[in-house]
Image (cartoon, rainbow, N blue to C red):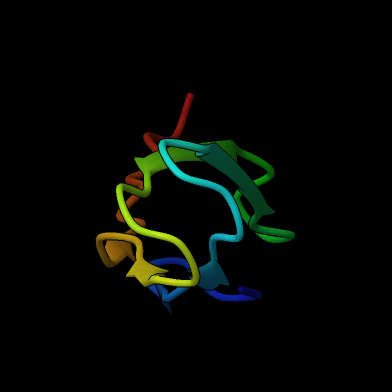
Length: 61
């Protein structure tokens, strides 16, 4: 993501039962790091992480 308020969608495929998938997405403009943890329960199941909407408000100092 390169713009504030952008939406990031991540699709990850799990290969192991009960495996924990961690997805780290970094927004270049905001510079914040987002970590998404999703747990798969079935072999070869496709896990779609929740859509993360970045909304950052910068207050002039």
